Length: 138
Length: 128
Image (cartoon, rainbow over all chains, first blue to last red; front, top):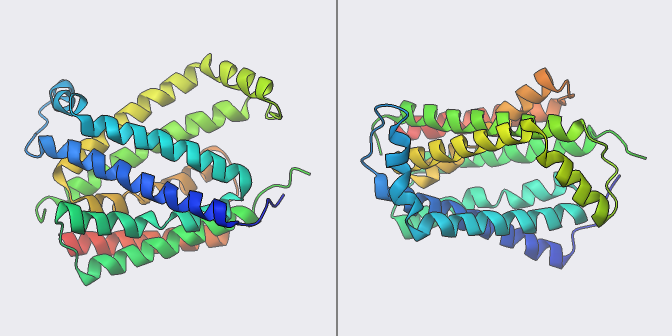
């Protein structure tokens, strides 16, 4: 059961999904940075760990983008196959490092990019097979 | 970040495990329902039925646990490293789908999984 081809509109939706996913992780990271020196001693520390995060706007901005990503992603999947959507959506594996470098001042080496390249190839392969092995619903 | 890269990998692994358990619970719940949802009314019933399944709420608990561990990992690790290493959930999903859901995992998926493993090893080595 193959769905419609990728149109410009769907492509824009997918790019937006990538951007929203990246923003989600960016805001999660911003909220987590509030507790960068936190150490867990027992499970009861969970509340102490989460408290400043829950009261920071970053975590909630993250949740908003989780929701937006979910809505866009569901829309995209209703139009095209998962095996087509995932490789295009994997663009976030490049976008997140770029955002990390420019906005979080993280340092990335050539070896890091090589690792990401392998992951990207892996994700494309993993999703490609889903189209072929899918049981026909007709 | 240099220090404790294995501890961070362990945290990300834990996040992925919790997320995978959540996905398996969701999938088995959904599989047990009639999947012929072709109208908004049926979609509404479908979701309502799901909300009455204990498995869904158990899944939600794992989802929360996954988020908390993820935030803890992010508080220790660089975002670019953590986000890339989190791709290990593809591997866990492939393995558990095969073991618990008896789904067929094709050759290409194993090849992809292999590439992801290499990528994560390179990243770990680079950040150690």
